[in-house]
Length: 574
Image (cartoon, rainbow, N blue to C red):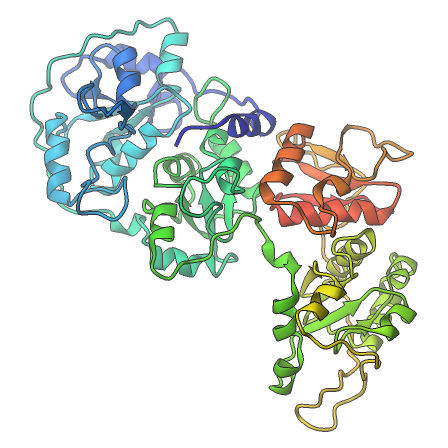
C-alpha cells in the first residue's frame, strides 16, 4: 500500500494546493475533522481519546504525546525480518488462518472487544491520525463508522502528524499507559455503506448509474506493478489516488474542490459510488472525502476491493487500459461482425474499411463497407455530406463502427474515429490486427463488393442503406477558449513529430503519437504509455487538447488518451 515514485510524480503533476481549514474544528465547517489547534487544546481531557493509526514503525519513531497506537507492538510487527504491520487498525482485523484475504473486519463481537481494549466508549470523542496525507486514519474511521459508532464523535486530525509538527507542537517516543477499558458495544452495523463483490460486479457493468472510485496510483491502475496475481484494475474503475484528496500541507481539500475533482472525472451525485483500492485501505480516503467532506449522498466502501475481486472463482476481468473496448482484434470481429452472427439476424457492427478502392477490391473482410480515408478528410467539416455518404454506404449510426486501416491506429483511422464520435455514432472502435493476421488464422477474405441493398427476407445478408442522422457530440472538438477553471487548466498535447507550425498559446507538451504505438500500430502497454506521458509532464486532471499540423496525428493521440481514460480530451478544430 505504499506509494511508488510514479504515484508521487502523478500527484505532483495533478494535485494543486488549495485552502486549508480554519483554526478550530467547530469552525472548519466539518464536524469530522479536528484541527491541530483544537487537539492541542483538548488533548488529555477525559472525554477525548487520541488514536495513532500509523504502522508500528512510524508510531515507535514519533507520535503525539498521549496518543495510543492501534497497531502491533514492536515485537509483533516483525516476522523473520519482515515488517508485518500495515496500520489503520487492520493489524488486528484479519484472522490470518480462517479468512481468504487480508484487511477485512473480524466479526462484530471481536471488533467490539478490540475497540474496548483501545479504551473506546460511546460518549468519548475519538480523534485518529496518521502521518498526514495518508490512508491509515480514514481506514480506522471507516471501521468505527461501519461498526455503528456515533459519527458525531469521530474526528480525523486534519493534516495529521505532519501538520502537528509543522505547527510547532512536540512529539514523543514515550508510550502512554494502557487506557482504561472502554464500554462501547457494537449494537448494529451500518451495512448499507459496505459493498460486497457481487454488488460491485453489477455496478461495474453499469458505469452510467455507478462510479467505481479507485484510490490507487498509476503503478497499480495501469499494471506497472504486479501487486497481485494479475496486474491492473477493476473494469470501469476511475483512478483517483488517495493523495489527490489532500492539499500540499496534507490537510484535506475543501468540499468545493473535492466536488470539482469528482465532477471533472464524471462522478455525479446521482450515481452510486463504490470506493475501493487493493485491500480497502487507500480506498477509505475517497470514501471519507466524498461522503463526509463533499457530502455526496450515495457512497459505499468496498473493503474487499481488488483482493476480493481477484479471489472470486469466476476469474473476473481485470483491465490495464481504461477503455480496452476501443481496440478490436480478429477473434472479436470474426464473431460479432462475421457470417455466423449475421445469419442469426444479430447485426450490430458496421465494419468500415478505410483503404483505397483498389486495395479493398483485391481483398477485404466479409461484410466490410468501403469508405476510403480520403472521404473522411474531404468531408471532415461537412457533417451533413458525410452523414449522407455513410448512410448510403450502409453504415448504421446505431451500430458499433469498427474502423479497419490494415495497420492499426494510423492518422487516417484516428481521424475517422474522431469524426464518427463527433457525428454521434453509438460506439466506435479500431481494428488493430492486420489483414494478414486475419487470413493467417484461417479466416476468409472476399474480393467481391459487400452488397448494399434493401432487405427482401428477414435475415437478408445484404446490408441495407441507412438513414444516418448525425447527432453531434460535445467535447470532441475543442472550443477556441479554455473553460474558466483554474484547478483544471487547458494543456495542449502536440502529437506530430514536430511542434505545429502555429504553436498554441498556453502550456504545450510534446509527445509524438508514434512514441505510444508499436511497429504494427498497436498501442503499447498501458504502463509504457503512462510512463511516457508522465515523464513528458502531461497532467491527467487537465483539459487536454491534442494538436498537430495534420489533423489525423492529433486524432491519434486523442484515441490513445481515451484508451487510457483521461477524463477530458478533445481535438483542436481544424
